[in-house]
Length: 112
Image 1 (tube, rainbow, N blue to C red):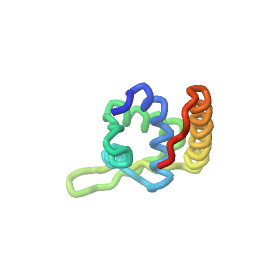
Image 2: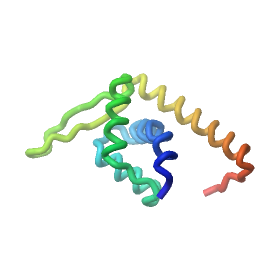
Image 3: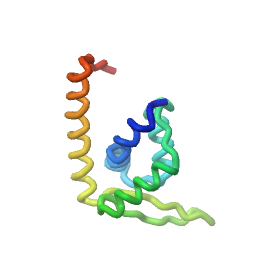
């Protein structure tokens, strides 16, 4: 597991990137995708995910769509055009930040 502080600083970028790559997703689906992609190193809680989703929606980066699934209603999130451009910018900013951190900490990037 990684530090919650590190995750908090990158959560918006993670969510925007997932939605850019996958179209619309619902909350639990986002948590599972992050868990799978990180080999269980990152585990989002409802307490961190939903406030971030609501903030992104309030900023006009996300829209929602409610879909009935039998007796349940699932709320899907998807990017607005502003969200799409913001996603690209946040990813570029994060890449530049990581490059700077590698330089400051004198680390060599490990290639996967």
